[in-house]
Image 1 (cartoon, rainbow, N blue to C red):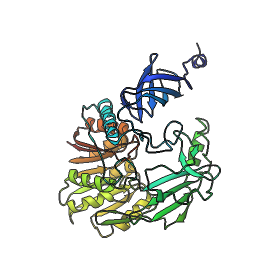
Image 2 (cartoon, helix red, strand yellow):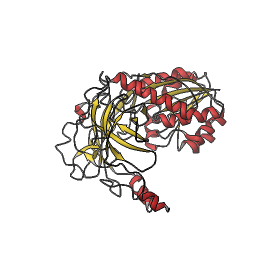
Image 3 (cartoon, helix red, strand yellow):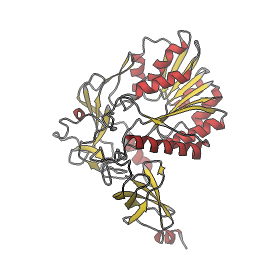
Image 4 (tube, rainbow, N blue to C red):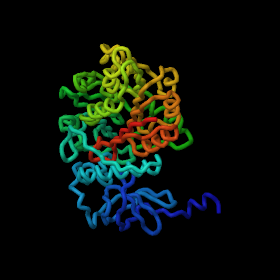
Length: 430
């Protein structure tokens, strides 16, 4: 049988509605169910629930994906969704707004533990902690949001795995002040809106022009022509400040940063302080030593570590964004022991002085083999690693262990309430 004939005869349950009982949680906001010998990864359900699931994606093989569209027997952990634009067919972000906050923490802990076991080779119970700064029901924690603009000029949120826009501004992750007046204006179709409520309570709005090839309602063209499409859609996009200065003010402790509204800052209002405290506690850098702060952004962790190394030591912050480096250097100009290097981490670390401690906060894809190997070759005494994706975090844990490091401490935080995302912090020692 040819490959084409096998594809034509494969199982395809797309659009099929099945009754299942949901099992353990899985990475990505799913629960695992089984039906007629196949695994179904179901969103919008909770472990133990009996539901009708509508298959949304099926590429054949042993598994497919579905949404829980009717709850037949609900879990005690189910609550009325806090986000009115989430749920089956809705926006893609608040995929756990139907779960109580304690249940969100338990589910996130189970997912992290499974990824550590499967990818990191470790058995470890994970208790996910809350971060101060939001409402008790998992709302009002966000300080910045990126909205999409549909073809008619209406702002909103993208649907799950789609460029289609839900033109409703009701997601409760951020205060309603972020949305005021946005729906009354017609925006540039295909643009994004970056909205920030900064530490002073000021609102900043930046309109980001559409990519060179508009992605509104479009998918990637596949392998043929994909390189040109990626280049066009990832090229720098013009930014227009619509409200505020476009330079929000943020604070951690008694230190203040003024940075680009479109630059990186932790979304949860309490996260920068919480993570800085953990990083400082675990780093234990000696006076006069050298510390690497990789993927350092504007230098929040560098500021927390400068006091440990003292006037004779140094903290070297490496960041690929030139704007972030400039903003960090301006904010920390009075701290002589901090220096900034602009460039990709894997290209810069080979030229840095030997560190006693390495702190890194890589993007969602994780640090990866090349960076972990470079860190290991530098011979630090301690490594503090932040991971915002359980799977890439688990893979990085395995890479560190293969290089002779031990996972001495691990903490996880519900940094993105009402979503499946979770932030993990790990301390590695030789």
